[in-house]
Image (tube, rainbow, N blue to C red; front, side, top):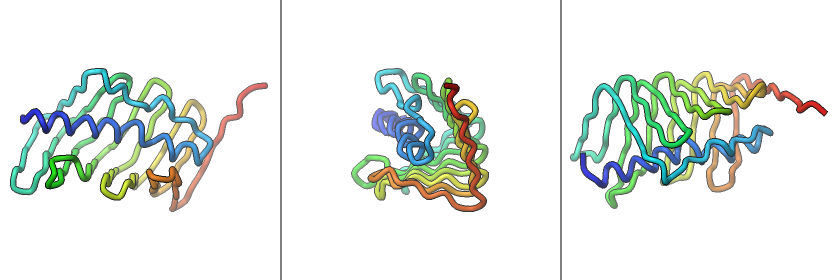
Length: 164
């Protein structure tokens, strides 16, 4: 694997963690624990990796686990698409998508992180939790420039109030 490919995968962890924070702020959930520790080693494991130089993509398949610091992303498949300049332009995550830290978690059937348009989309059985609080929806789209999130489909919010 090229060194530049490994460097680009660091952006994938940023997708896993730091980008969930704006959406959580809109729902009253605090996802500050999903901030990736960029100094921590990045570990990617999968049963299979295919690098396609012609279309600029890397395909991780089967039992994909990506970890850095306290963040873990697991899925059946992760496709990383690179721009002509060599940076990551889009990350498609499919199949039992799960982001986990010690205190927070997010699940969906699919996730798309569009770096060019600064948009994160979680779709299919979306569930975001922190402790006893949760937000469920069919789809969540986050504008990463503004932090605005739109949840659609049967949206359900469960907010656990702090004891006073």
